[in-house]
Length: 390
Image 1 (cartoon, rainbow, N blue to C red):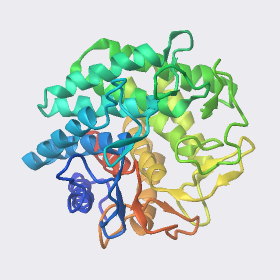
Image 2: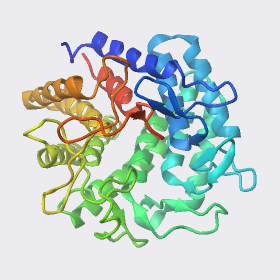
Image 3: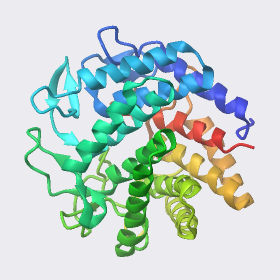
């Protein structure tokens, strides 16, 4: 199998798109979010801001790859849903989750707003003008309510009435904000996005990491001191798991290399290498293959399940590291992990990737795509790899 071949990657992306194309479109607005293994809809009501935004990103990139106008139309369809249905008419912010067009979780979440910026940016990239207005609206909202200049970081969570910031602070939202700001800079060519992304990256990958074995910890208090106890009983939490997350060490490694293309500094490559090698070394499952979800500060697995997105981010990061260092070890890692994913995660019957597998490679349930998935990580990794092919 030619895992290092553009045609292979494009064919794989098209097969994933086919899985979602069959049932994702909702004629009444937006996209269905939750699908079973065969692509049938499991949940028709619930819509998540992250899912909707990721669908917009996916379909914008699909249009860039195929030039098929149906993807541009789908992108616009999703953008309209963000603007009109996710918007809380009382406060004018975008709600985290709705069901049957009614708000079921009205919090304003920095994590969700990061993906609104990403969606708006990519929509504009394919010629949907209102994408820029949406991205700028999200940027301005985050500056007003979430940005903490003193700490060079964004707060996480705001009450539905926009009056109360939750004291919790986390790296996950900030990581995806960096991703979104890099995209916004590349698309809009406005330096404010790049400068902010660089500031946040240095804060998390260097300054805050110095508190936690030079790795990136997930949870902090309102003064940005590490909270070692937060969610200690939840190593499998979807957005705020306890323990070091190898997928996030690896994702930061990728983002630092992306950022370095626009803002070259030696520390970015050095930290990228360290975070990738630490994350993969601590999470590699030498018995069953793949990378586990989490490990403790002492180095023990806290959650030995295999999550699709962890593997996908490791594919993208290892390829980038191979291209920038020319070290064969990164290439060999890339091929080996693809072989594991091809055997275990890729559904060769129905398409797309399974969501979570046990350590031994068994699917934990029949929901292939829960809220938030959309295979944005898998297709995003493939697109990122393609951009770094010779």
